[in-house]
Structures are given as C-alpha cells and as structure tokens.
Amino acid sequence: MIHDEFNFSGKKVLLIGGDSDILSVLAKWLSESGAELACIENSGRGKNAPEVTRKIKNLGAIDIAVNVFRSESKFMNQTYESIFSTMKEQRRGVILSILSPIEPRDPVKNEEFASIFSRGSVISFSKVFAKKAGPFNIRVNTVISGVIKKVMNENREAFEEDIINYIPLRRLGTPEDVAGVALFLISDIASYITGEVISVNGGLPSSLLL
Amino acid sequence: MNLHNYLDFSKKVVLVTGSSRGIGYATAELFAKHGAQVIINSANKEGLEHAASELGKSGYAISSRHADVSHPQEAHNMIVSIMDSFGKIDVLINNAGIIKRNIPIEEHSDEDWKTIMETNLGGVFYVSRTVIPFMQQKRSGVIVNISSQTAIFGSKCAIAYPASKGGVISFTRALAQDVGASNIRVNTVAPGLIKTDMTKWTENNDVEYEKINLSTPLRRVGSPFEVASVCLFLASDMASYVTGQVITVNGGRTSLLFL
View: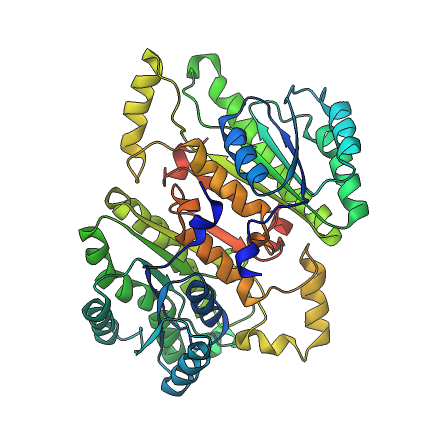
C-alpha cells in the first residue's frame, strides 16, 4: 500500500476548469501517474452540465472529479448531478472543488461582497454534499487557494507587494502549491477525509481570506 | 518531477511524541517506511521498549527517548539529546495525549485537569519551545500537532480533554503566524473516532458504536494509518504552502454542523 499512494493507473478523472494553471499541473502529474483524463471548460451557469454527462459517458466511469471555480457557484448542483449519479452506482468516488486564487478587488464595485458570497456557497455546498455522498463511499472536499503568483502588470505588482506582508511564509503561492494539496485530497492518503476544507495560503490570517 | 519524491523522507529526522501505540505508533511507522530516521517517545518505558522492538523488526531507523512531555525539563532534555545524536529535527509530530471519560464537571478533580492540560497542551508547548530555535537556525521545519474533533464539537469525556485539544488548535494558528517567516510550517490534524486503545470503549458498546457510524458520513471509524498519512502529507513538500491550518480526519462528521 505504502508506495502506491500516487498510483492513479486506470483511474478515470474529469477536470473541469479549462485554463486554470493549477489544473494544468494536476493534469500533468495525473497523466504521468497513469490516469485517464477528460478536461472541460468551466463555462458557469450550468451550461457545462450536458458536456459533463457526455465526457463521463466517453470515459465509461468516473473515479475522480476536480472542479476549479472562479465566481459562478450557483449552478454547481447541475454540474455535479451526473458525476454524483455515476459515482453512486459505482459506490466509490472522489470529488474536489478548488476555489480559484484570491485576486485584487475593487471594493467600490461591490466585487468583494459578491466574491465572499460565492466562495462561501461553494464551501457550504461541498460540506452538505459530503454528508449526502459519504454513505456511498464518495468523498467531497474543498481547497481554498490563497494568493498565487501570476504574470505581472502594474496593478498586480502593487497588490502582491502589499499582501505579502500579511503572509506568514512571506511568499506568494505557486500553482504547484495548490495542486499538491489537491493531489493529496484525491489520493487514498486522504481516505478518511471528507467534508473538509483546506486553505493553501501560506498562513494568511483567515480574516483576510476571501 | 517524480511524484514519489514528495513522500521520500530519507535523510529526514522525525520526532513523534507519544508513539508507543495508537496514532503515534502508526505515524512513526509510516515515516520510517518512507525512509525517515524516526525518534519515538513515550512516558511509558515498557510500552516504548515494546514499540521500539516491534518497529526494529522491520529494519527501520528507529531511536527511542523515554520522557514525559508534561514535564518541561524532561521535554527539554529529550530535544537536546536528539540534537546531540542527530544534529537536527526536520519534523516534529506533537501527538502525546491522554484522555479520561465520563467525568461530570462537578466531579472533575484539579489533578485530572492539570495532568490532562499539562500533557495535551503543555507538552506541545514545552517540546515546540525547545525545537523551534533549532528549526529557525536552518530556516526550515515542520510541526504537526494532533488535536481532536472534540475540540470542534465537544464530547462527553472529561472537559479538560476537549479544552486542551482546543488549545492545541489556537496554539497552532498563533505559532504559524509567529514562525512562518523562518520557513517553519505549523498545522494541526483533528482526528475523529479512530480505532486505537483510546477508543476501545466503543467496541463493546453497540448502541454508541451504531450512533457514531450513523453520524459519520463515511459510515465507519478510521484507522490510525489514515491519520498518519495526513501527518505525512503535511510534513511533505506537497503541503509547502499550507500553514496554520486544521485538517479534520473524521469521515466527514464535522459537516453535520452545517445542517
């Protein structure tokens, strides 16, 4: 058992979230470890639900689903519907939601409120979903990304310089930092963890989290 | 990169307190399996010797230190002795803990309060206090503290137990802020019901056992290895940006609070 933690050979994995750097890293690791991958865009508004169903049909089964959220959380239910029903039949599965990295926001435009509301609802949804899915041997967890290093522009530089003072580890995160925790949660190392939320933020105090 | 490198602990020195049995033993065994030089510790000399000989059978790099972490001087001396022998401590797992069950608060003695607090919370403080400066010197280190889900939603055991475990969570959050700049990560694992000697009472209690199973989404108790593996993850570079966090390992039981 011990050296098989990251053996994903034969596992069927659905990655939802298109252009996310975090998912790119995870996809690379998983395919190197023998997983069979299907990727789709996260179009939001539940529009990807038919595509999710199609991809699962193509895979023939689904062991792991990872979803990266930006702002749209209202339609998670639709996205997860066919994933859950397939896993339920299999009586096994792992679902992971990743909240995308913290971005600088304009408080005047009320962006902050909308973001907190949306991120909070992803967390609550996952916790309730974990309770519903647990008896079918399906684990559901959430990763909250902190501030992740990005291509620079002028605004970004000021934001990063400021926020780094609040981060105990005194550095910004990398896509690998978040992907590592994601990998842990979808692997069997985390076999007794469900309904859990892990922040990958270098210790940024939770009052500044969202 | 090879993912398996993430869990390669060869050349790492790992101290697991309270590791003669249960979660501590499983954690010591798991780190040793992954190549670490592991130091096991217990206040119980016989238990410690037994654990050392069991682990030794598999050819692991195991060293043992008899010390009661609730005594500041014993905790300090243990760390100094480990530094003398191995020159560093890369990973500290503060696991030593004791519990007493079913004592109503009005019958809870001062002595029980003091022993439980001094072991479960004091021990974490005494050991960490001596280890931190050595970790700061080499600007790296990982501490994992073992709390309990009772810290989050209470339990019927003697009140000092959940109180001490709640203290461990606050200790973790504060220390993470304190030592983060020295590249030291501090996190907590909060296990739920795990099959060990500490939870033996549930085995002969069908009603209680059924209740626990039904209130746990995964419908089963956990194994010590399922907690040990989370410690391994937190100590590895997979968790390189994770600090000040509490991870519950309880089959989803916390989520009941959300309904």
